[in-house]
Length: 317
Length: 301
Image 1 (cartoon, chains in turn red, yellow):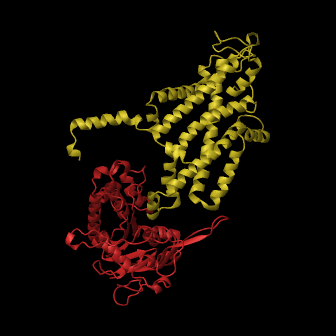
Image 2 (image 1 turned 90 degrees about the vertical axis):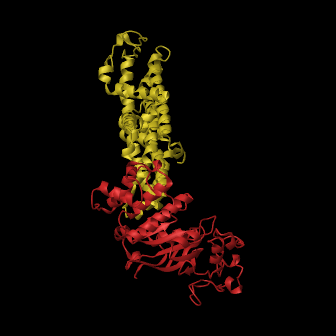
């Protein structure tokens, strides 16, 4: 199986310029992230809010310009593309956004929103525009009668389905899902996840799934990347692999366990996430880690494969 | 879905559509309250009066009748005559033409220029935005009268300089409002989503940003027409606007000051018309703001 997406050492540094009354500051939102996404697979990226997972998604799609690294999509070096080449390539790689409430222009009807991708790319749908709208709405499980509705007339779950229909209109091969269910009710979440699974099977899609919900990622994905403050701290090759990084273990322990017999005592994480503006030297997690030793506070651990799957820890579990 | 609709339901839908055709537009909704009806009705009446002035005015606005100067309101001069015996009613009717056309033209120029500058500044940002906003804010720091005087000094007194003075006086307002809308809209997810579809900048700007930014600008433009009428009257009062014998409300009041105690009707009627027009424009503008539900967005800029 060939890799659809290869990400190498991808980084993004944001800097706030200094002024007469403040120091210039900079932060690494994403720091040296590398992974391969084979065709047809689903990789999940988990981490708490502010860890850089949404920025990572935008760097891969070049919605935010990376500071360093490389992104190869279907053998093409994305960062070498001109603006117009990039616009054409975007048809192949689409994104579903976290907030369905603001992801459709309030002045656009459902039909116009769903057909807009063709207009933008200067393409004609295979059949008539009306037939294409109906086909796309059916694909995402929406009634064709909703085509003339405005976004404020439909529910959040329906809006997210419209967002998915828009993303699928150009028949992309890669879909980046940025917390597609985070702002929906739990019952609607399940429907959207079910729809995404079915679409993957029907259309042979490859997903990059971004979420803060580890149990959802475990259910939905084939592989998991755990991020902490801009770095990948652990790459789980399969969803039931045991955690080797103390942070992953804490995340796993804090997921809800329906069977009371299997419930364990949850040890909540001590301390705060350090400010990304002035990261301490060494491992960013060291201050909150019960296994931390002296080396952790001095040297930043690299993603290391010795003794199992890749983990960035001096004292892996 | 269609199968479940009863004949009655279908009828209700069709009836709703034809009745709702006007009330569904935001201007239609502004007419729904009685304030909106009265204010909007007055504005429509005034515009029609201005358009059909030659057929409505009982006398020629410039015809002098020195024997019948300073006549009090009565017959045949309903609102009396001025010092030259010209019919005040006819001059007020023709004055509506001057006032409305100057104010509306000026605001149209101001909106066009302001939206272009504001949209470009908000969309491109950076140094360009700072340069544009600094220049625009500079125009705001001059009093309107001073801007008018500069134009009068350059191109001489008349309606052209009045028009440009009013246009420049309101330029900053439209530029700032448009820029604020664009900056706010640019952060919306649907803009990022459309960029990710591969949209070119002009598609983002003309299909998404400007159509969503236009409603508050139109309403502020409507209110500015009211202010523009006052400014036009002020400039006319100082003799910088319409030149005789072209009637303008401001110039009529100015010429009336000399006979304030002899024939007060010469100054009172144009003054009342200016006041009522501005109040009507403002009341209707308020109704429009409620109908469009954009009070929050106007406050933001």
